[in-house]
Length: 434
Image (cartoon, rainbow, N blue to C red; front, side, top):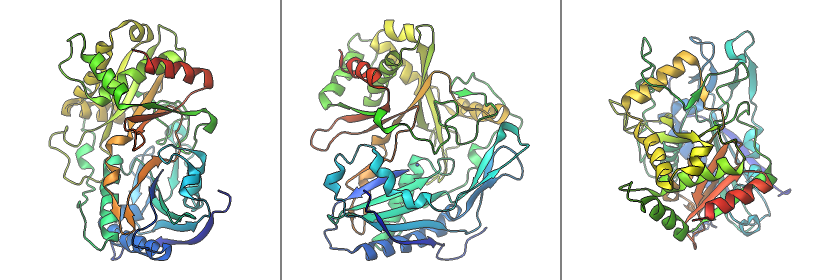
């Protein structure tokens, strides 16, 4: 995709004054013959409208004045980056669109060029560095075939996947000339640490921070910054067909120890075991699998409807590699279930307090994160130029395993992860064995 040419880029401000996740979505050629120029200006108009309710997205992440090692959002109306581009490449030339690949990075490239002045906060705890940058941006690209791609960029310290979905549903509605679908509520006070902190549980999902950590450290890794991506030649796809998935769920229930089992629980348990063995962890090592859980309805009182922040907390399952090899499959599935069930109000608040005291990060020791993208409901989005065809992360970062929808004609799930060649062969074998 060497012929991508920037057509237009602008900083979009809120339509009326307000107080002071990278992914790419694909669309077939617009059935209504909408031009790129019209689509782009509808997008900009919709963003200027949506920024009235999401005013913090037009602000900047800055070092907090109250705490030296955390960020805050300065709602300064600095603007929101939007870009448009064209390319002679066609959608068909990209191949599988639901598979992260190097070419997708070109679909957010002009967003990265927006100035991101990194402020080195010397003499601060943890060697913290902050980013003075807009939290979000959109990049609309028209392909040679007429199809479109909408690249997006967010920091998850501002919005989680659920809030991003709400934002994009609102944006899609506004491009169609309609109103907000979800009224956002950015009040984050419900997730504030208690004073004094009350840590009532052990929290194996977190690790204490070290001097090289920053708020952007990747889950499941020790020192990889958020911008660092894995080597593309080590990112692999393993497809689980509907028959494979049904087989896993039946296997989990076979011994009668479990009453029920969801698709996520069955697949997660299998991935946990297969990956831990494939990377040749010692049998005495404790393997930890993290998976984000939405706590909006788990805390008391519940988060407000339309909560526009990050309410994801890492659930976890942990066991020694020996236990992963020897225990019945139903037992591993049960550990995943327990990782979800333990996240009640007190546990979530204890975890928030633990982070307040320890300034920790998601577990780094012999761990990885499993992200279920297929449950975000992105296919519901319909913009003025058409309904979303499919969406994908731009890259697979180290220590993260993605679950995405399988091909439309086949169904099932696609697993994307970074492993060396011999490791992925073993991982595939273990995933497919009975």
